[in-house]
Image (cartoon, rainbow, N blue to C red; front, side, top):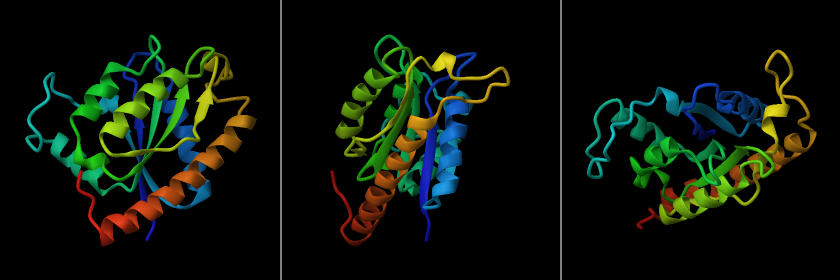
Length: 189
């Protein structure tokens, strides 16, 4: 049985590049072959302004929570905004709790000179609090606005391609081990 992976696009800004990076990592996922992948684009998720008590979610958030719960692993695609990650991503993460538990989370980040790494460092703390396992190896695109050709295709990906393979190999290992563990010994936070 293939592992289930959800790729989460964390930016909702106009003119964002997140979908391009999500498409790029999704192509790597297909080539690697360990996962069946879906994409959750936060621009398409109707998040209410305030967070309800746990388990009290309106549709379609309840359906999305079931989808996250069925996932074995996640990749968060995030830009860096003001030395951190987007508010929409934090709001989305906060609408869920048990869905992240005992599952690995990988990161594809992009930004200026830091490549989004400061956003990832902040996200690692959030996911640790949710009892998720943040994968150490990730993919980072510095000066990301210079990495697209006139047709919007990502260029200069050699190092990133190698990093993607490492990320997916680590994610595969953790997702397999943790899925087996959740089945034999359910995780209780």
